[in-house]
Length: 147
Image (cartoon, rainbow, N blue to C red):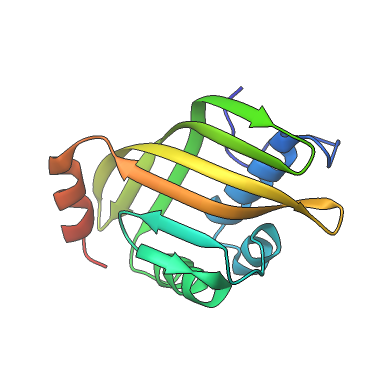
């Protein structure tokens, strides 16, 4: 199953629900839903090609805010993933594919992605994200694609 945020998953205990919620927030540039998806813990962390390493929602939020308010459009979907789950945690390891568009120019994206969610207040909240672009040349083009 490809996760893009458009899935109709009704079981809120299903890790796929939390993943779909994240991609819905990301692909619709919904910062409020993104905040709801992420843990408010200062232990929350993110390491990705655009935002370096960030800790806590205020720092993580700054990356999404810059991305959502930027002069480009980014779309990604999650595929080729595996989920490992305990009662309190789940980790999803897989790949994102998509694009970054600006002024008629499109950069295809291929990203290795890991997301860790923890059960908080009876729901899944994202605690960690790590993303790496597959191709070093793509990383240079991604960063140089105006920010």
